[in-house]
Image 1: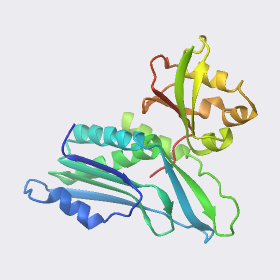
Image 2: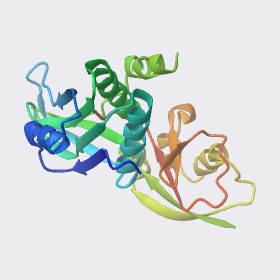
Image 3: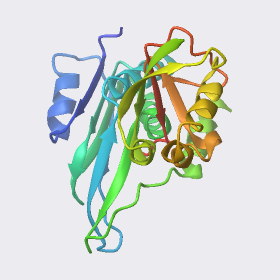
Image 4: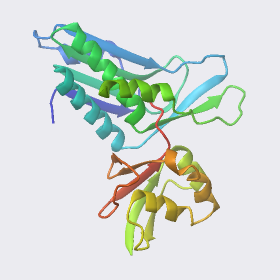
Length: 154
Length: 86
């Protein structure tokens, strides 16, 4: 395993600045850090919360595999991925990806790659809890997310 | 007989009505696809959960596999819908 990859799957919130600091602390060789923060959004005032179900064990393992592939492919110096589960309300954090590289492009590409594969391969499922109290639906997977992933193999 | 531990997630779990179970499989069940076909014979709840068999994703020992993957030696087989994390 590559010590530069950090993966956490947790119920609690996380702090972006603290994760960036943990990744860069004591290093002078990093030239670029890119962060992606995914939040729970409410498009029409109709969402009370999302319930995120995950597959314990596999969720960590799959995100780890994705991060290691990104580190190798883009020669990243480090990658961190944190994904929350449980009940998450609009405005709250869901996922954080942090990548580091000597120059910016690899860090941008690495973060993008990790998110595209995380969305389609990491075992998480979102269920909506509606503001009107009605039974929520499971969020459907999007073809656009599959297409975003597939462009990396072209 | 081949005994397997099955785990289910999201609406597959809800429709089957349980999150996990241990089943004895008949000898003819060789691949993930065979397993899905077998499960659909076990009752209306399985039929409902696995109706659109081609959209069901599978993992063996916590790694993604295709429906053609042999299940021999699997400690844990997971069945779930397409993922919607991130």
